[in-house]
Each structure stands twice: as structure tokens, then as C-alpha cells.
Length: 329
Length: 259
Image (cartoon, rainbow over all chains, first blue to last red; front, side, top):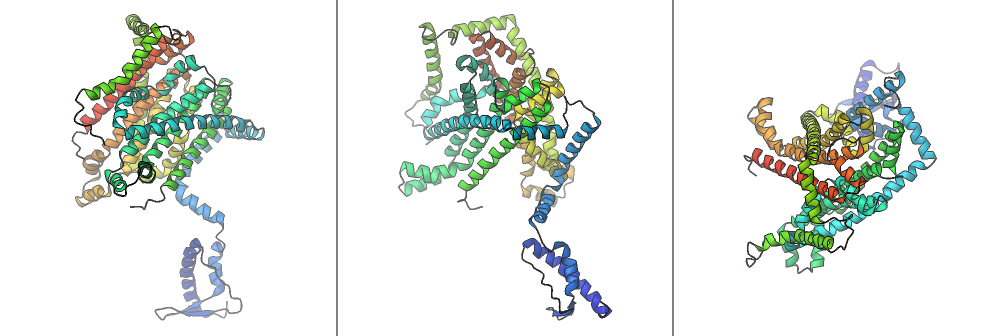
């Protein structure tokens, strides 16, 4: 270091600071790899402006040291902090208050169990497999009901859109049925079909059926007439124009219906399991409530929320996939 | 495709609209009279009607209905006003959106009825718990719709306000509020429907209290199908009534809007 003239050193410090900024940008793009040259102590580079700048590799390396290896963790951390940073504050504060309340015993465990207790329950129920048993039972139920309800809803919505006459015949009844809150059917259905699987399947199916029918009907009805004309010009058969023109154009509305349907179905299933079931996530919650073991309730809620999120995410991915032909406007 | 041929007179369409409901009612009446189905499972139409008359005469059904509606509206008022206010806050404040947005979005994924056990413990399973649950149900749709409404204010509206050097208050009054009113109304409408669903849920899940849900459960336990059918009819009428009121209010408030 002592051999470097002072004015050169300040120059190089400036340039290495400027370089460090460039390197940082390049590192984030994943393309820059600093090459340390051990033998040459000093390199001279000539910029476009003709100014001679001195670079000292050792100093460059020193400046770039922090960011030398942009590991996946580093990038993830940057992503999380910049994207979610402020959004993480509220959950963390809530969690901290929850933990404080548990530590100092502000609320009894029967009102608010400690976070650790909830984690314990989750761990215990994951390791003995009982959580998976309940989850799979609830998942199977909702999938059965969803398949039934969405199938009927898609078919009926399509038929209603295709035939105004059929729409006239069926719409009053459909409107009347959809006005009744879904849980209002529970007492009737219990009397007619009992409280077994049939009850869960039919209620979930009913709650899925209504938004799916509406979404499909509106989606197909609102396909611009110009699109249909293209099919006529190209002398497409009915089936051809259905599969190549009408269905693709109606995808957004149909998926709005399907997403709302699945979310409705999941809600309804949880409600029915709370009311009348001996297994499943909803039953676990009812059971935990009766025993005043809220850790059971909260653990089940977490799983229910996670599954709701996954459902929405999955349908969103399928929709994007089906819509990949569309060019962004 | 949507226009009916001229040969079909003005009477054809109403006839088609009424056909299926009338056929079903007729089938119900015939099968009940002919004894095709167990009267316990499907009581005759006139039994349901006379049950309705009796219930209205002794006032029980109307009292229950009144209790349910009061509960529903109390929860709706709390939840929808909080939801709309939070939606405005999140829409207009970038900071609030970044702070609370992610949490509220995750919160939305938890099925509504999964909150019942927690709310029942925290607020009690009595009136407070029921109203808290209904408020929670009304909160989410009004929040989401208002929030989205603010975000969807077209950029050219904001530019116009900037060009005219509107104050913040003037921007809110003359541009933002009229622009988001439809979204707020969509949210309130959805909140009204959710709140009614939650009212029935709360009455079924929490302690028995006077209300239409309690009447339904009583009908089920005593196997009084006429009472159960009557309550379903009533629920449907109320739901349709809410829809009608919401639509009327929307047209009245938004009549200035040209689209």
C-alpha cells in the first residue's frame, strides 16, 4: 500500500466505489464474477472520456466482498424484505403480542393457548398421522362435492347460455334456490337424507353448483358476437366453435365461478363438519371447542387456511395455463 | 340469439317463466294427496300454508324473524362500515396497504365458519359472539371490493385532478368518491348476503337463541317438516328481499352515473 501515490489511491477509491455499485447491479442480475489478479498490484483502464483511472484489484475485491456470492438465500432475503417487508410487520407484531401474553399469562390457555402449545399440537398430530387422516377425509369430501357441483354447474350454465328458452324455464327456480342461505338447507337435508356422507356431498355440491352455473352462463353469453361470426365464416361445426372459440373466450368468467365455487364448497364443508360429523378438520375444531382446547381449534384453522390458499392458488395456475394463448393488451 | 321470434306473444315468456315452478307445485300437491310420499317427509302444500298462518297468528315466527333480522343488521352495520373504511384506508394509503394488505389477503383464505369456535370462546356463544361472527362475515367482501375500487380509479382521473390542481379533499369529493361508489355498493351488497348466511350459521352453531335458525332446528328435532319447509321459504324470501333493496338503493344512488 505504501508504494501507491496518494492521488492515485483516492482516484482508485472513487472508481472502486463506482465499480462496486455496478458490480452490485450486475450481481443481482447474476452475471458478474470479479476476477482477482494476484500478480498485478495495479491496473490502468482508459474510459471513453479518456480519463485515466487506476484500479486496485485488492480494493475492488474488498468493496465487492459482501456480495461476492449472491446465494439463493441472499436473493430470497432481498425478495422477501423488498416485497413483503412491511407486510411482515403486522403478523410479527401479532405473534409477539401473542407470545408475550402467553409468557406473562395475560389470558388463560382456554382463551388463548401459547403459540408453542399450538406448534406442539401440530407436531404431535403430524407425527401420529391423525392430522393427515382428518385432512384427507375433508379433502376427499370437498373434492367429491366439487366434482359433482361443478360438473352439473358447467353443464347447466352452458345449456342456459345456449338456449334462451331453457333459460326462461329454469331461471326462476334457480334464482329461488340460490336465494336461500346454504346452511338453511341443512335441517331439511338432514331429515330427508340423514347426516351421513350424502349430506356433506350434497351441501358442498349445492354451494359449488350455484356460482359455477352463474359464471359459466355469463361467460358463454358474453362471448362477443364477432367471435361467433368468425366461426360461422370458417364454417366451423357447433362442436368446433364451442371448443376452439366459445370456451376459450369464456375461460375467465368460468374460472371466476369455479374459484368462488371451490371456496364456497370448502367453507360449506367446514360448516357441515362443525355441525354434523365425527371426523374431518371441522369436527376437530368442534371437538377442541368442546374440550376447551383451543390449540386444537387453532391448529385446525391453520390447516384450513392453508388448504383454502392452495385451492385458490392451484385454480389460478390452471387458469393462467389455459389463458396462455392470450397476448397481453 | 337473445331475441325471441315475434310469433311468440307477450304471454309466451311469462308462461315459460312460471311453467316449472307451477309443475313442481302441482306434482307436490298431487303426490301428497295421492299418498305417494310419506306425509312426514313431504307434507301437503296446504299443511305448510296453514302452519304458516298459525305461526304468524301466534306471533312466534315473526318474533324469531325479527330477532334474526336485528342480529343480522347489527352485525352487518359493524362489519360493513369497518370493512368499507378499511378498504378506503388501504386503497388510499400506500403505507397501510403494504402494512396490512398481505395479512388481510391471507386472512381471507381461512374459511369463514372456521372462525366460529374461536369467536364463540372469545366473545361468548351468546348475542355478542353471534354479532361478532356476522360482522366478520360482512367485513371481508366490503373491504375487498372497496379496496379494489380505489385501486381501479383510472389514472386519467388522477391526472385530471392534478391538472386542475384539486386539493386532496376536492379530489376525494369530486373524483374519487363518485368513481368508487359502484365498487363500494358491490361490496355492501355482497356483505348483506354474506351477513345473512352468517346469521343462519351463527344461530345453528352457537347457543340457541330466538331466531329463525332456532326455529329450523326445532322443526328438525321434532320432525316437523311443514315448519322446516316454511322456514326455508322465509329464508329465500328474505334473501330475495335483501337483493331487491340493495338493487333499488344502487339504482337510486348511482342514477347520475352515465356508463
